[in-house]
Length: 356
Image 1: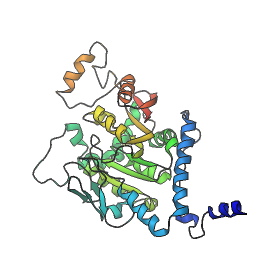
Image 2: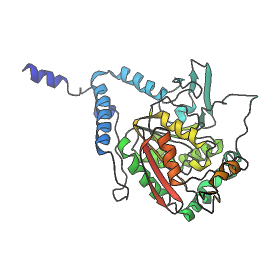
Image 3: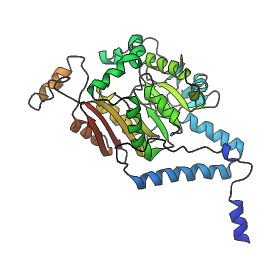
Image 4: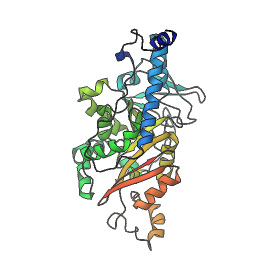
């Protein structure tokens, strides 16, 4: 009888209906993709440990404590880009564009405040500065242009198909299969552009929250405009953040998934960016990226004999960084990532690596 009573007391209380518990969404990716699913045991362990932790809290916490814990979790999504300490948030509860827009964030250690600008939260180091200004590479400034931001999903990205990119839907499905081991976690879409994939990730229901992150203010505005046209995004945990990929505003080991679509070749320092991605990923977290491979057409110095000249020429012009598949693998491994794999089609490559 005592054992039966103890077992009964451990079951969920009627005061906590299933709708009040946080849901763990599983991946809804297509089953007919051509990438093999790896790390099955890790996936099961990762998902089950998250379920146990969330479900257990529902058994022991009263509604007010749960609400405070939820607000704390939302606050701790973001960290100071200077010292990486968690930011203190003041404002309405909720992790969505309107709630974050009306919130203020502050780092108690650096005494620096961060606020929303237009429709996005500015978490760059230069946020709030009035006199200081930095000159970025031409390729970075190009994507901050209102015209390029407007055209990105209206013809610009469609041209990628000529280089072997399979198209947004297929790219999304491929990425979803790589992210399957971390379903239910926090996903950050770095260099998201106009949010082409950020919106797809958010609508999929596969993640607890999705953060669309880019350095371009105009790209984030475009992402917001597209998001307004989709009512299904209004009830999702979706945020727009301006940040530098080489100085990501997240605490170490705090993010489950990072996506970087057609971005690696645009970054001023790919090694710094991948190192930052590795820093913020949790153990078992997954990084997925796509880019253009180095070819004779886009990089005349891709040949082994001429390769030493590429570094010198690259410092004197504004060309993009194009890499070979082996260079990308070396970059990921050198930044502490494991289980590297890739899919190549012409000059298109999708690669994935994992945090140990």
